[in-house]
Image (cartoon, rainbow, N blue to C red; front, side, top):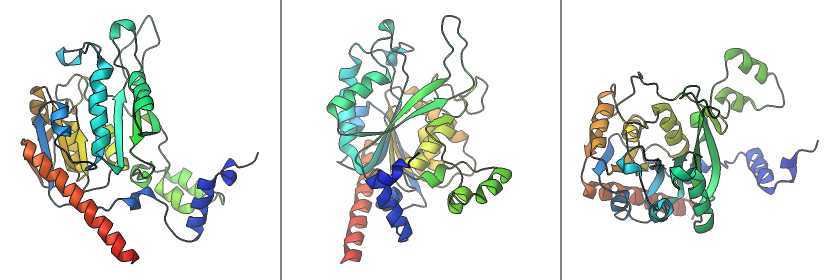
Length: 325
């Protein structure tokens, strides 16, 4: 069978760059400016209040785990879900840097009685009204969940990853899964495989087998739809460099702020539910010897953080132009 990569111009270009010792990694498109002290902004407000205060192209990664409109609480009921979501999605596209990424959590649970809040609806809307690029539809597969009698028990959730442009940031090496010693030794003997890739580990693929949080998990802070730290950590590492700026529009359990601290990213997180600040305090109590950070609850500090991001990018572009002259 013919190797289709041989007829793919993009693959051929990458092969040529590799032979010349030049990089083709998207990680090199983002100038990193890691900070010893990260800034974490935690706001009780509507997501639009935060988004409309941010400059254009000022954010590297936006995480959205929005209400699914399935009536699990007062904040999970919308008469016109798509009209509501379309407003903040448009603002997300505006604030994302050209190298930026959007992560959209959701389920494929559409039923008439469940409203119109599933991920399929939002994907269709973005296809029709947005220039964002769907890079991957990630399947989060978990072994634990609620049993069922009238249908197959659900054991997965979908995560849509969009890039702002074709220059989106992606760091595969930061999330590779190491091979065990026997498999690594076997693969290193295979002349068809690149030794450096074998040593780094395998691509985790777009099916992520990570357990959900059990009812007795030590990570639990009380939020009904809390995501595990391992899931958020993989997204932050792969889709943003250290020192970059993360926005979480539906902060919920506060897990994004906690992981941002541990991974040395700046974060701007908000939620309309005042209870999220209580969840956040429980998250911060779980930190063990964290890197230094500053926590603020002022919208003005969100502007300062995003302004710092824009300044870093501008400086990076200036350095690139100076080097090439």
